[in-house]
Length: 78
Image (cartoon, rainbow, N blue to C red; front, side, top):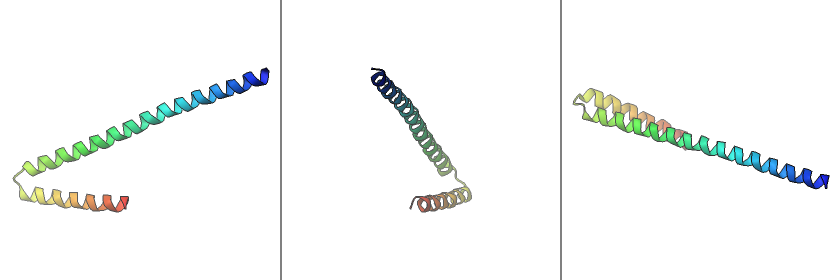
């Protein structure tokens, strides 16, 4: 009887811990996705602002930086 209750206690304890960690992990990944979306939004806003300016030098330098970022990013992934 004591062994049975011990086993059930262990099972309940483990399941509670698993659920707890699952919730934390879900929150963590959700936050990471939100950060990524925010970063993309910021980058698109920045590029739109640059495209609106009439100064060609600003546009060209921004495009160079953007192309370099794309190259390094694709290099990191691949």
